[in-house]
Length: 106
Image (tube, rainbow, N blue to C red; front, side):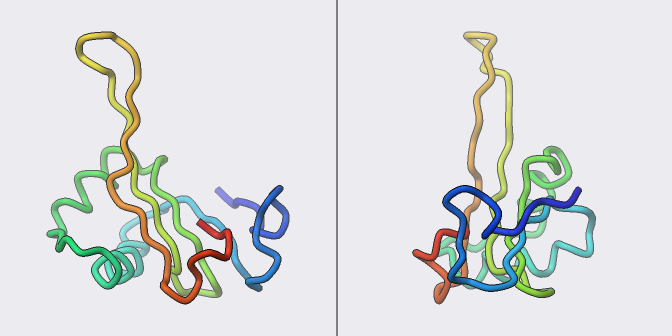
């Protein structure tokens, strides 16, 4: 699914050119996400952790792309709360390239 450019979204980033948001498609997207998160998050994750979230909730995993480079990623899940029978969302991983932080891209 194609998502709009950051500059087309209300409050998006006009200061960072060629930014687009993409939903996770398949295994070919994994290396860019893993590289970004391994570099920018303090906790090391095994590939099994990535696959747990991405394979179970691929529609809740998004990337911010600049050209063909992944510069931002958010990996989420959505479960039914066992006591209340309501939905509960969870952001498992969120990362943005250091030089692009504060530029309203993710």
